[in-house]
Length: 247
Ligand code: DGL
Image 1: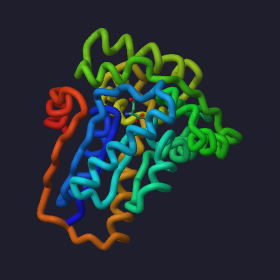
Image 2 (image 1 turned 90 degrees about the vertical axis):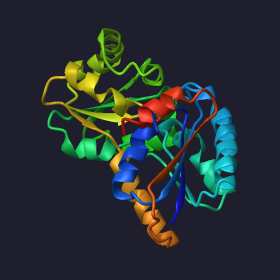
Image 3 (image 1 turned 180 degrees about the vertical axis):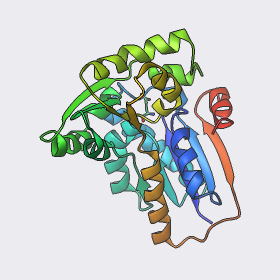
Image 4 (image 1 turned 45 degrees about the vertical axis):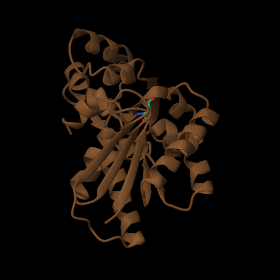
């Protein structure tokens, strides 16, 4: 049985754990929410690397065989440093620009992510590969992480916060929206309410889950008897526990 550590700045990474458990239901999972330091979106890469190290140490002490960085911002800032320092495999988030670029009919794709992710070299490189054939428009999901951390997943206030960042992408003609932050899938019902019916949203979590499956196959760990999930948080754990019951 493999023990898989999963971490995020908060509860958003549960959207990734949900997809992982669909295809790997028998492993042992330890989920770490760094909610005492949430959001990561505007924090410096140095700070996020420090937090990544501390969380990795904690997960290793609890027996992790592999770690999923279930946070686009932390993947952008810290995964290269963590891979250089630790020998266990790290699986990170991929900005789903490619499937969006291949699927768009309008020729415009929208990306919603944090400021840190949009500035990251991995995202800029991926965008550069497709920016010639399609137009890529971006917006920070301003206030989205806070909505999810306060479990405000519907209602007029959530709708107006989400509309303020989503509408500009729709106005630019985007017909596919990439969810570039793991908190955002929890706001999909609100996004679908705001967007016209033909608009598609792409969540990269299923692809990340398949990547983890490949990594575990390489490690050669046998399927466990699970499922088992341990939830850890650097701050109060109420949101994490409540959101976990929905996945
Ligand atoms: N869930 C995160 C991400 O995927 C972090 C959001 C934040 O803390 O700002 O980017």
